[in-house]
Image 1 (spheres, rainbow, N blue to C red):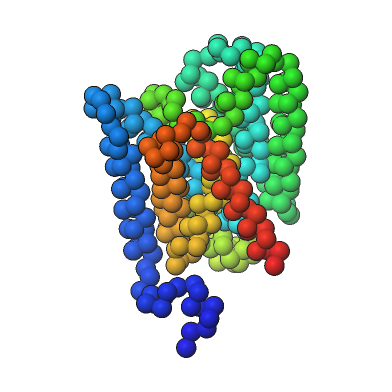
Image 2 (image 1 turned 30 degrees about the vertical axis):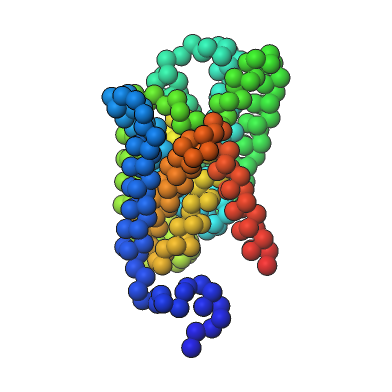
Length: 330
């Protein structure tokens, strides 16, 4: 007989043997496809020659950011062994805000840089910061990953302090324009930047998927992974570099989405009956796509609101973090 706890987990008509990871992925893919079609066609009044490219660019940015943030969070949680941590702990978001603030202080709200050059500069600065941090800390023996996380927190606080100091030098009109760039914006993505970002994100995502087997072994722990023949330091460095690329490119493209990864990664762990990364990674990406596309669709077509989707995501992600912390405390 099943215990009451088991009865609460699944309805009586579903048996564990009947739930297959491929079936869950198929359902998630169908849901994501249905929302994408609805996003492209619902309420489309006007010339299709304008509507399709405009909505297509926004949809592509939603899907790219969803896949990048979800993949980066799952990878980071695997190597850190903690489902509460996200790559934001490394200070990427605060470094992005510092870069934006520095540009406004130096060049004003109009800016002096070509958008593509600015995108590459922001991405390069965040990736370079991560690589220098990894090279400095991971090359030392003993507790490298824990030191890395602690130094990342300290760097995030430093970047936030510098950013707030520079913001005090701005006049109110410049500060208002700057503050709008601190939230993810999917409505003003340039197609040329989208194509450039897609090259980096698709390549990094494919590399992460190729590492799925080694990531499954890393779930067992550092000592167990080494005993099973995994080059732990090399794999750890490679995974963290992929995380840095995914987070940096997506953040430079639309802005920071801090809690999206935490939300979708933990949902993927809950809905997938397997812990294999070959299933968890695409599941997290699909759930992120459903969340972003569905949320944007509801905000625009149902409630006719102009509020930023990232604000809603941050609220839901914050609630998820509180729930996880409460469950861990029990």
